[in-house]
Length: 408
Image (cartoon, rainbow, N blue to C red):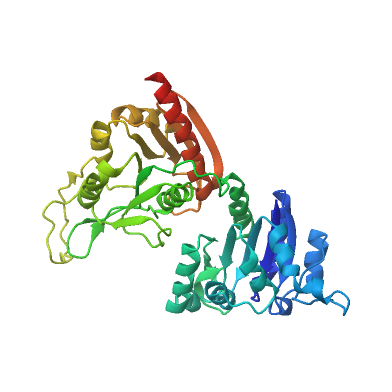
């Protein structure tokens, strides 16, 4: 695959050189495109030496009077010859131009001519990252279907500490590599399906301000929603409280508690042909939680908790001919626990992962799972971005449906 690597003007531009090398180690051919601002931080010669290719620095860079016409349409040629466009660092200025279709240099002009997947890795000051204008631009770009590699927390060049650091080059390269597993745009093998997906945590009130919850970010469930949508399905996403934007053209129902999630799922059950229970529902709740804040005292406090509704078990009893996919987040005995859950909840597939492994599961952009199937198989899926994992789940789900139909 050919990757066009756009480099924005920021202190993190030096990391783009590391990214170019990482992409090549993953087997990509890399064409570097530097903005004028990027050249203030790093020289084109660095990228030429790493990639072995001439670096593009402007719409008419190096054009003579004889080849001006050819140079003037080079952005079209580059757009047609490359499979993925990666922009890192994506500065606030670049993100605004991309969101609103402003094309004043090679990179932004080529972006408008590019029809493949786009990966954006933002980097900037924390206040800029949190500004309402920037958040709105990010919403537009996400709805356009672009993959965002979120910036990381840490010390910034301006001396502050917070979100805004460019993600590590190897992490960005892995996200790009995961696009190899994404079905082509023509592969719409889930048309006619209605996929009901749950995502994120639930929050069970303890009083007016406190609640029980867990570390689920919702990223896996949202990746599944996007994958199902891309494959042609109608998607209903029942989401607990998360801090990510839903994919475009997905019906979203927002809930907070397990009881609310159960009600939303049952309200939409008749419409669904496939159910994917990716949410991390709290196991316990406090019934009749007070509607005021409980004041702290020196006395020891005991809470009486009751189990929350077992939504997956209820779905297992009511699913009929629908495919039911559950999730198992475990810290030990992964496959054994997944098989137990498969049988006890009457699932067709359980997606199991060890949440104790660093960099995977909760809050991470990556995952490594085992797909435990009703047919008895246990299929390991190596560590990859959650977008790639989501497509692999649906690949195996489609095969499973065929296998189950043949057994009936």
